[in-house]
Image 1: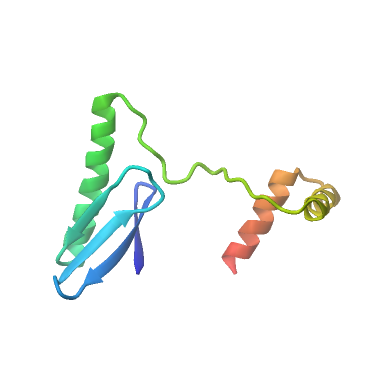
Image 2 (image 1 turned 90 degrees about the horizontal axis):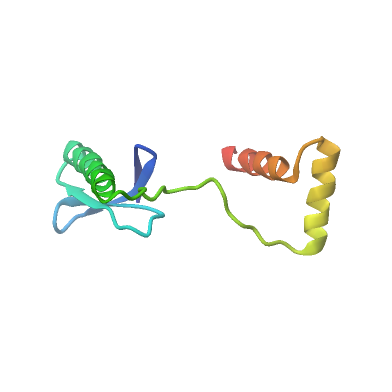
Length: 110
């Protein structure tokens, strides 16, 4: 599977050999946004149109569109590990949140 991004919405895309079609679905939303196309250009256009239609639909209803990522998530760890993180953050002179974000960013960029 591959991914595509449009206006911060990320979609998983796969190719259906039997139907000779690309299918895509926006990830990490409760709302469902899907699209398809027979070529890459068609797929890109359908993705953009589907996201734009979703945003327009939300605007018509006076609702905030769902965002794929809020920038917040909860991680549960054992208390000794939590303590070790707090100590490491203090030694680095940053908040626990900043230390965790920096550490995760380093791990993700590898």
